[in-house]
Image (cartoon, rainbow, N blue to C red; front, side, top):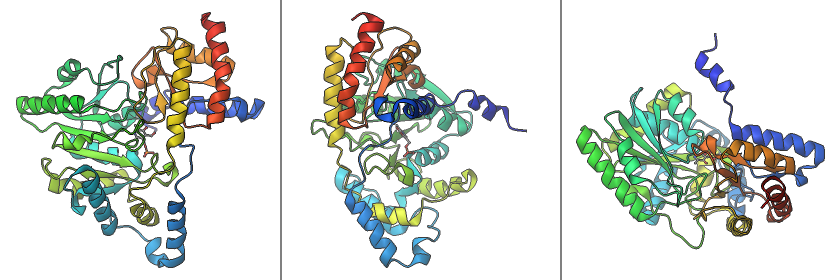
Length: 396
Ligand code: PLP
C-alpha cells in the first residue's frame, strides 16, 4: 500500500508547478507569447559558452570509461579541490577538499546537510517567506518545520521572533540569502545578530545548533552588491550551493555542500554525507558535469537581464501603487497583494493571463511572487495586462 504520507502530498502538489502547467495549457490556446507567466524560477539566459565548450572538449578528449564512469562517492577529488580553492579565494575561508561534498543541485545538498545535523523528530527553523520545497525537504527527512514569521518591512529577519523559535528541539536553522521569494540579501548586521543568537541558544541548550545556508542565488546580486557569506559569521555552518541559477544549469543537477572547517565534527560531515547517500539513493552527480563545472567555477551566465527586468517591474509596481520591497538580488520580487486573500488575487490575475504565485505557499499570505526570469520584451508587454488587472479589479 502507498503510505498515507505520500498520498497526502498528492493532494498538496506544488502550487508553482500547478500554475506553470496552467500557463502552458493557456499558452496552447492563445499562444505562449500572450501568457505573462511569472510562475517558475527557470533561468531564461543560456549557460556561458565556456561551459558548452568545456563539455565538447571533455567529450572529444577524455577517456569515455572515466568520463561516463561512476564518480567517487564524495565527488571527484580534483573537483572538490577546485571548489574549495575557489571558495577560499572568494570568501576568505579555509576549506580543504575534505570539506566539500558534490551533490545533485541545492535540493540534493540540503537533503544531505539536514540529515547530517538533525535526528528524526527534531526541529529545523526556517524564516518566512521561504522556498516551498523546504517543507518536503525537512519533513521527508523525518524532521519538523518551525516557521518564523516574516519581517515584511524589508524581509530581513525578525530577530526577537527568531530567538523565540529556538528551543531544545532545534537542530538546525535553514536560511536562503539572497532569498527566494523576497529577493532580500541578509545584511551583515542580520547575520551577525543571528550568529549571536545561535551561539547563545547553543550554549543554553547544550548543543551545537547548525546553520544550513542555501545559496543558489549567491551570484545574482544587483547594484554591484557583494554577498555576505554566512559561514564567515557562524562556525557551525553547512553551505549548500547549486549551479542551477548562476550557470543556468538546473537540468544538470549539480551543486555541493561545503562544511565550515571550524564546525563541530567538521571532519566527519563529508564522509557521513557519503553514507547518507547510500540510504537516499542519491549518488554523485554525473562525472562529466562535475568536471565541466570545475572549469567554470568563477563564471556566470550573463545575468544582467534579471537586474534590468527587476528595475522595470519595480518601477511599474510602484507606479500602480503596490507596496513592494526592492530586491537586492535573485530573479524574484514579492509585492503585497491588493487584497488580503492572495490566492483570490492571483486567481483574478489569470483572467488577464498574468500568472502570479500566491504568498501563502511561501509562508507569507497576503503577498505574491513574480519570477522575472523571462524576456524583457515580455516583461514590457505584460504591463498593459497588469494595469488593466489593477484598474478593473481594484479600481486603482
Ligand atoms: N533552494 C532555493 C531557494 C531554490 O529557489 C531552489 C530552486 O529553485 C532550490 C533550492 C533547488 O535548487 P536545485 O535546482 O539546485 O536543486
